[in-house]
Length: 143
Image 1 (cartoon, rainbow, N blue to C red):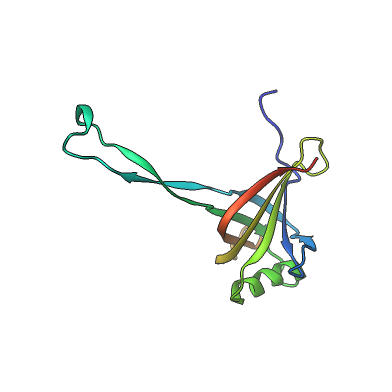
Image 2: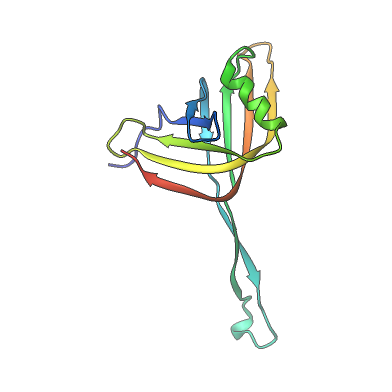
């Protein structure tokens, strides 16, 4: 098979701090985690063939970005505003292929670094949310 349909992927937030997750409704796009790793340059005058040399540096869990059909009265959407205002990290999940035998779950802790709302004259209200991951995100087969 060449690929899988991503329809149904879910973004969840821990509502209690004790692992009770709730789905955020009306999410239209999810991207991430977009993990990165630093490359530390160690080039020296005697590096072979005039090529730069690198060693592995620190890893960054990256970000998860959401686009939401925004409903200002939706309790889950309001909770994301509260998450932005709080000082503590919060746990989130991205569930890929929910209910499928190949279901996988990303578990991550993070903080919301960006919330942006759009009110176009010829389209729906939209909200974009960026979650900066703190530490290592973990992908687990859960299907």
